[in-house]
Amino acid sequence: MISPKDPDITPRIWGVGVLCHAIADALDARFNPVAVRGEISGFTRASSGHCYFTLKDPQGQLRCAMFKRSAQMLNFAPKDGQTVEVFGRLGVYEPRGELQLVVESMRTTGQGTWYEQFLKLKAQLEAEGLFDPDRKRPIPERPRAIGVVTSLGAAALHDVATSLQRRVPHIPVILSPALVQGIDAPASLLLALQALSTQSDVDVILLVRGGGSLEDLWAFNDEQLARAIVACPVPVICGVGHETDFSIADFCADLRAPTPTAAAELCAVSQADLVQHVMALQELMQNLAHRQIDKSSQRLDLAQSRIGRPSQAISQQVLRITRLEQTIHQRMVSFTQTCQHDLLNKKAYLERTLGQTIENNQQRIHRAQLRLGLLNPRLVLERGFAWLSDEQGVAVSSITQAKVGQSLQATLSDGRVDLSVKGTKQ
Figure 1 (tube, rainbow, N blue to C red):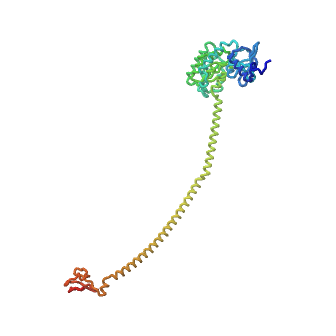
Figure 2: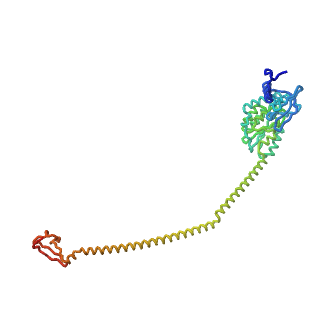
Figure 3: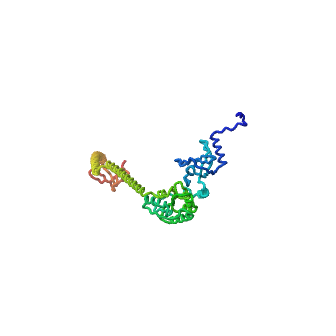
């Protein structure tokens, strides 16, 4: 009995998830990638596009999952009881702890050489960027003309022509016939594609063919055709085989259609859709125009409510001008009266001032006259005094001016007396 207390022999205790992960790593390192042959059992395709089935033989069975991206590359419809060869990676589905093979590709038994060539060329061109979504061009909605590359006797031609006539009868269709099967088909398809690419009015090309086996569709896995599709100056829609059929041309085309009819439906907007779109635009424009008219009408109503009738506005302006005239007139009358009153007051003041000044001046003159009269020599002479002067009229006011024998004149109040100096005495 093993004792858990003995550290030398006690096994490691794993977490379930950690152990599943470790087993998955061991399987990946030991087996992957792996190729397995077996019989399909319980095949189902989920709504997500993923496929689930069991691969079995007399010695055992293995649960398998094939995700949507890989399932879309199948060129046949898997079914129960079919023996296939699958390629993928072995691992552990950890949520249930189950061994699971994630299938990346599948082929029917006996198909190996063809399918291996397909996968090899696909990997090569994908590595060169020929499948890059960023390289692919949008499909014009209204091409001037549609080119079609297919066989004259193919059912795909009838399907495409019927679909185009129904959807876009107004767009010209230019057919460039080619072989779509056999050893000469790749070169024929290449020439037909190049012939359409020189048509200046062709805006999109449909490369179509009906369903068939891998061998039947092999012409569309040609490397030169793939490179011509990429180099084509106009977009190419590839509709080859059925929905489950994939070819190299599908990956190189600007758009892959599941069937030829689908390719015809994807190459342009239908006439009915265009008419409906035009009608929708017309209705939209009418609605926009009506809304704009309604808005303009509301703005006009608002403006009218603010402005009113022009005659009313003019009457209001006339009334305002009349009131202004009256105000100006009243102010002018008041100003004139004020000026007149001030003028009269100033005149009266000037008159009073002038009268007072004249009266004062008259009194001053009178007083001056009185003072002047008192200074009049005549009054002195009337009191008995005389004014002496020599013969030259010079006043003699001192005896020093008089000499004996000198002639003098004595002016009296009523006349003049001539005198002669007989002597002087102080």
